[in-house]
Image (cartoon, rainbow, N blue to C red; front, side):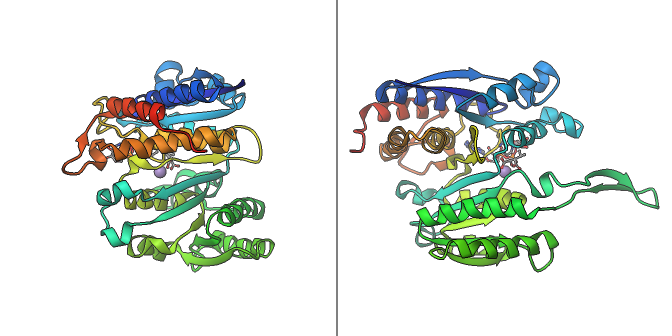
Length: 365
Ligand code: NAD
Ligand code: IPM
Ligand code: MN
């Protein structure tokens, strides 16, 4: 039987709680589908800082690089918020993404029929939304140089960053986005700030050039401020969105709320080759950490993306997705997606119910 090596990075806050659920789901699906997993759990983020003094230990990166795929919970927390930049949990995550060269971050936002009432938008606006944000993940203002702190001529403190994109970075994310749109509904909206920023002017120019390779995909451009507005005005107009690192970060959190909760949104980060990195789009949620309140479904769905995009195990991925729907159909809800008349459960119980659903859901033919 096929055997895969998976590095698990639970991280901080609710990270370990949601990773435990996803790991159990992967283990069960493996036994049912004749797959074998070897898991290696490694420290990352604040947990790694406390243990080793750095947010991404060499051993953790090495294990990730040698894996077939990597599943991450979340990192960060109050305890490390005032650390110097190179000693922040978030810096470890950026080093991991850079180290694995996973430049393409796929963040699907789908309004499940079961969760229409959990959306903060009106039913008729939210119903049927199914979009994909393709976020550039290893460039832009997150990585641009120069960056840092200094002082101006008056001795006043300055903090500065640089939004910079090279043509090849735009071209490769654009190709991923066009390929993604082609497999979906053939519509791609490129989001930028080309009315103000040079990096966005180049972005728009290169995306328009790459479009000639994909005559079957309908390309449009939108400024990011308008896109933020359009996402809550009429989200159904979007199929696939491609955008830079920071706009993608912000717009995907916004898109998540259309679906009911940030606790529902998975992601896949992919490079040209090598292991993919799979993680929920949410953070470590320190406000609810350790209270068994976290919604584990974003991480369970990230495990499904790991199976599909990371390992090519489509059937196993579909079984996990079907199990999530079945669990919701049976009325189980964590607090973030709960509404009257439904069964309010914690993270662990939600995990148990997903396992039950995996067991009982008949695999798609
Ligand atoms: P967050 O996503 O952690 O939390 C925002 C809000 O959403 C909170 O109220 C939280 O309780 C809720 N929430 C998030 N995930 C949830 C879940 N699965 N179930 C139920 N509710 C959920 O964002 P934040 O509060 O801005 O950041 C907290 C920490 O996480 C910071 O240190 C930040 O840097 C870090 N962070 C990490 C990642 C990551 O690891 N990929 C992503 C975002 C933020
Ligand atoms: C995310 C997070 C990260 C990001 C932080 C924690 C570095 O917000 O994964 O969306 O900004 O990319
Ligand atoms: Mn984010």
